[in-house]
Image (cartoon, rainbow, N blue to C red):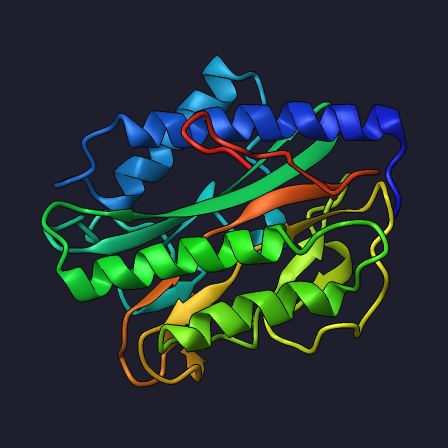
Amino acid sequence: MIKRPEELALLAESGRLLASVFSLLDRTPLLGLSTLEVNDMVERFIVEDLRARPASKGQYDYGFVLNSSLNEVVCHGVPSASDLLKDGDIVNFDITLEKNGYIADASKTYMIGNVNPAARRLVQTTYDAMWKGIKAVRPGAHLGDIGFAIEKHAKRHGYSVVHEYCGHGIGKEMHEEPQILHFGRPGTGPVMREGMVFTIEPMLNRGRRTVQTEEDGWTVVTKDGSLSAQFEHTVAVTASGVSVLTLRPDEQL
């Protein structure tokens, strides 16, 4: 689980490149595009401009470079030419990138056009919950501290946290140990050590936390049809706290 300094440098480079993919999406008018068009645009940018590999494509036989999770889709939404981004939608794009053998993973929920206040509040609270988790990262703390901080923030604002999916260690493989739960009790779980690298990626629902997988075997939706949002960063435990490897230019720790 512990990455050497040279490995951390390579992971930071992958994270920097992945952040630039989200910068591309930030400046792209998404309204009216299909999720498949977004997928293809991201693939061209990663392969042709960044000279990197979209790590999700081919992983577990998945055929696309990103997950596109619209509205009530919690995670693992599959890009489609028929899924057009409409005014009022929220959509999470979850993207991975490998450069020089090391993988970074991040996601962001975008608000398309005129999104109603309730949906905006969900998206903002999910983003803030992710940061509550990130700020709990430091050597000597416990992994349970991350989940506790996230769930406490979510519940304070009236949202539920999905339990079935979690963050994960990452490096040469997309999914490594440890698992990072987005709920829990402080002072429980493994102790964080300098050099650990993992994702924090909470999924918050407006309704109940229960989910179900659709017939395609990928798409996970809220069981009650309520809206869901997600954000994700890849982080490293440092001697003094945490480094966000996928930090975007518009963000600060």
